[in-house]
Amino acid sequence: MNAAPRPARRRTLLTSATAVLASALGCGPPRPGAPEDRRPALPVQAGVAEPQPRHVTLLAFDLAAGRTPRLADVRRVLTAWGTRSGGRTVTVAVGPGLYRTLGLRLPRLLRELPAFPGDRLDPAYSGGDLLVQVCADDPGRCARAVHRLTDRADGVLTPRWRQDGFLPPHRAGQTPRNLFGFKDGTENPARGQLPRWVWDADGGTYLVHRRIHMDTRRFTALPASRQEEIIGRHRASGAPLGADHEHTPVDLYAKTPQGRYVVPADAHVRLAHSRLDGGARMLRRGYSYDDGNGDQGLLFLAYMRDPGLFVRVQERLAAGDAMAAFTQARGSAIGYVLPCAGPSLGDGLR
Image 1: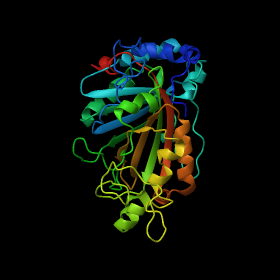
Image 2: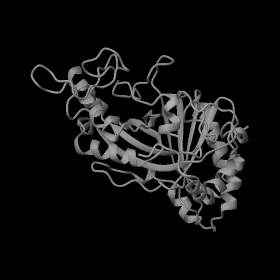
Image 3: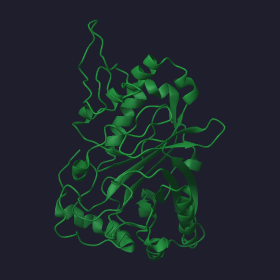
Image 4: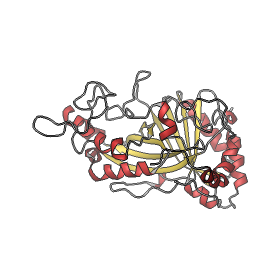
């Protein structure tokens, strides 16, 4: 992955697509004097780098059928959605289909994800011309925001799918746990690393979403030691196997006196490790979901400068991850998170 900013000529090529759409969200020039470790070259949407609120609602919209799609109509809807409102964030990503339908140049790395072995994708939870992440500590705030977003789509956009999620209870500042009971997000890059691994030179980023069903009954019935071998971490502390602290770097080469890897060859953390991708990182911001009748799991949300990173990691996981026996992707979507100059989306929701 190329971590350096793109040349000015490439940024100009993207203007015909991203700048036109992003202008509807109040996007503009960079803030003067912003320290590099806190803000990229251009202002960014909220809902990516901030601490996670306790609840999320994910929405996907398509361009409405039966009418000629116009860029001006989409811009009008985005303007009506606004930029920021206290207590909640709304983050918008544009799928590749919308760019193609409106005849706009796609962002350089935006393309549909390939098929992965083991996926069982449900169209009712996949794809979308626009992907929207609504986050708040109060689920009622999410619901009210969703109602207003849908109402203000004004016949230009129609809902495609919706999914609610939550964070299991955890202490402030601690890594949340997933429904398997393990900490999820330990290896996220630090805030100061986001301009290198997450933010595009224009202030945008790529979002990959996967709705991952988790067979919690079978997994949690395993002995704790076997669960830890599958994940590659201690359940209680979150530390890598053989270590005592959660944020101790994973030692991929440590072996037992018998010559076996301390972190097994098919452990999830080994196959997903950034060392296998030249150190490249993604920012994971996942939530749990529970729709009843045994349908529960992880709403995987990851932000990155190059979605090819996710593809490489997922191909390794599909080929050998021990955790794959207990998980299955049932929904999938990708989009480009537009750069935005206002504090964030949401002001128009008041």
